[in-house]
Image (cartoon, rainbow, N blue to C red; front, side, top):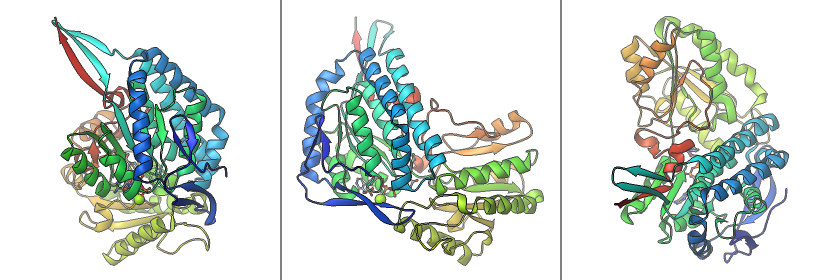
Length: 462
Ligand code: NAP
Ligand code: MG
C-alpha cells in the first residue's frame, strides 16, 4: 500500500515536525500495511496558517469556479475508484464488493452533489429592503472517524469548499491512507494550495490541537458522543461554531400490518452491513408481542446466512469492545439466538453476526452504541409502547418504520425523536439532511442543509 511520509499542507507533501508515526494495520490479517506521520500541535498550527492564508482568495473565487473544482474532484475520485476501494478494503477490512458500492460510490455521489449545489446555490437573496449575502464561515477544522473513511471526509470537505471555506482535516488514525488518497485527488482536481490541508495524527494530540486552535472558525466533528461533548465544550468556550455528528441507537419499528419477513430481513442486513460499524444502523428491532417469536426465528436465520460474508471490525480494540457488549447482553439475561462472543476466525478482528432476543429497553445492549454486528430484538405490546421504547434512549440519529399502509408508517415516524426515518425500506438519499436529535449531534450534513453549516449571513440594508 502506498503511504506518504509527509503531511499535505499548502499544496505539497512536507515532513512533519513531529517524529511520531502511525502504523496502519489490515484488520483482516493483522499485518502492518503502511506508516504515516502522527502530526503534533506544531503541524496543526502550520496547516491552520496555510488554510487561513488561502481563505480570502478561495472565498472570493466565483461559486461557478469552486463548483468546477468540485466537479473535477468527483471525476478524479471516479477515475481512481479501484484504488480507493482497495485502500478502504485494506485499512478498514471492508469486502471489495461493499467497498466499491458504498465506500466509493457514496462519496462520489456526494462530491457530485456539491459540484451541482455550489453552481446553483443562491448565495445572495433579497429580503425586503435588504440584500442577504451567504458568506463562508472561514477556516474549518474537520475531524473524521474510520467507519466510512472517504464518505466522512467528503461529507465535510465538499460542502466546506463549495461554501468558500478552507479546511484542515484530521482523519481517524485507523484509516489515514484513504485520507492521503483523498488529498492526492484534491491536488489533481486543481484546488489551489492551502485550501485543503491534511494532518494525519492521533485524536487527543492532533485532533485536540485542531479543535482548540484559535485560527479555526468552525469545528466539524464526526465520532463518539464522549469526544463530541468535549469538542462542543471547547468550541463553546471560544464562541466558535461547531457541528457534531455523534452516535446512534436507532429503532427499526415493525408495525403489525407490515410485511414481517421483508422488514426483518432488510433490518438484519442494515445492521450487519459494514460489520455493524454504521452510526445510523437500526440496532434495535421492535416487534409486536404476537409476531415476536416468528421475527426472532427469521432474524436468527438471516444473521446465520451472513456468517463469513461480513468483514472484520476495524481494530483489536473495537473487537474487544464489541465482544464485551455481547458478554454483557448474556449476563443481563438477553437470549442469544445467533452468533456470540467467540471470534469466528483465528486471525483478524472478526465478530460473528449476533442476534439477541428478549432484550428489554433498560438493558445495556438496548441503550448503548455497540458499533459491531449485533442486533437486539425488543417486544412491544401496542403502538404507544413501541413509541416509548423507540424514543427511550439518549440518541436520535435514524430509524425505520414498516407498515402495510405508508400513511400509518409516516404517522408513527413523525412522532419519533430522530433525524432520519426510512419508510418501508426507503432508499438512502445523498441530498437529504443527515444528523441527530438529542445527543446524536448538532447540525446536519449533506445537501443544501449540509452546505448551510459552512455559511454565515450578512445583511445589507438599502
Ligand atoms: P472517536 O474516538 O470519537 O473518534 C473520532 C475522531 O475524533 C477520530 O479522528 C479521533 O482520532 C478523533 N479524536 C479522538 N479523541 C479526540 C480528542 N480528544 N480531540 C479531538 N479529536 C479526537 O470515535 P471512533 O471510536 O473513532 O468512531 C466510532 C464512534 O463514532 C461511534 O460512537 C459512532 O457512533 C460515531 N460515529 C458517528 C457518526 C455520525 O455520523 N453520527 C458517523 C461515524 C461514527 P483517533 O482516530 O486518533 O482516535
Ligand atoms: Mg478513537
